[in-house]
Image (cartoon, rainbow over all chains, first blue to last red; front, side, top):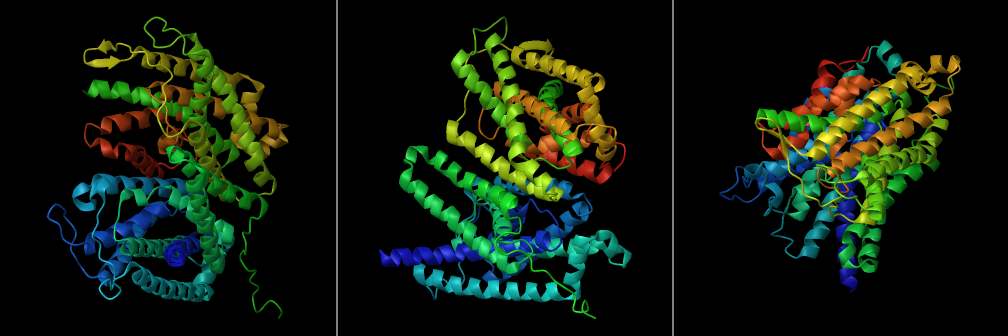
Length: 316
Length: 298
């Protein structure tokens, strides 16, 4: 019983950290740059499928499944997502804020359709299985593997967090905030708003691709049903609830929202008869929607919002 | 083959057009992309189902699969959905507006509202499909090789009547004029004594009512399910932006073009990719002519 709870907690923590990377990516785009990405799940899927196609054990019926090493899959997943984001960004980044939301939302829908329909490459609705887990030979029980993966994820999240904090404090990060706050002023000072936005969009999406690749190598399986639009809304709820514009807030939000989601899921399976599983799932989604609206209405800064930054020259 | 695709496209297009008018109004008058609009279609469809559950779909009249009760159900759904749209504005968007929230915050809230609205439908009616009526009907051959069901012809005719009435309302009534003034320039409209709150209220009620009709029509051809509106979301935005936001004629023509593009694309691509078609249209419009066909400036 106790080990059951423990292994559940380890698994839970792994998922929270993967979602944390997604939320950090969104925070760079929305929190610091003011870009409305409504297609998070699309970039997550590109990373996941790239990794799966490159690393899964070869099978004659599929075009991909190259059986390449894990690290190659991770790096290629990030590169593929970055390239896709760059292409999409070139087309859409100059659009009005809510038009960008519509466009990215459409991109995510289209990517899911490709995953569902291009069977020789993606396995269609069956998905791809037999995706190797890193060092699965060394950590051969599920619990020991999950523990090792948890350590790996913790190290990665720490690295991503530190890197983001560093670049956001750099001149580059300050320009992002300047564009978000007053585009005209930033452009007047000679900064290319479009260029900086595109960079932030690509970098944030690359993190989402990384999260996708980590997810499939953790689960060992990929299917189009892992990439439904609800994930995009969950990640937003995480960022908004935690505190947009604050990387610690993004991580806390990921923990908070996933806890609410999982706890309500457990409560629903215990309380709602299996014949009404659809209604139970609906309750879970309603909670996410309500959380999003209530935070926006009553605590727009989230749990810990963005810290006020005052120039060190202000006192002079 | 191509004739049938055009006929199907016009029917889909008419349904998209009714939904797109509301999207176009909210984009232009409320100044944000209301991603919850698709759920008003769903609510309209299911509210009509409630009415039908009590009154019955009626005995099939003439070639149609339903009687007057279904038309009454559509009217009931239009009224109630208009009130639902107003209520959502009152509970969520108005509070954000009052606080001077960023337009994109409204879009976030709209997505939240959409999640709640869609899943309340699942909670009440479940995931399965529902039908207004299980009557069978024979399709009519309009032109050689082009067949339509009488219900579909009825939908097209009714949609046309609704759009003509709406055009009259916007052109000649004081409220309609106030709405157009707000769409053009909110500060100027306010200076001219337009009551902003009243315009906002009418915008929501009209958008909701039109969405409900679109939802009922979509449910009639042939079934209702909780994703009935959500699946049209991209098509609605594509139509509204293609037509040029704030333009009634634009939204209608945009809707027809998106419907046609969707159905004609089936001649070239596999049906699995059909739902991506509106998005491709949208992307093309945003790149080539972001102000839309009938928009005045970017």
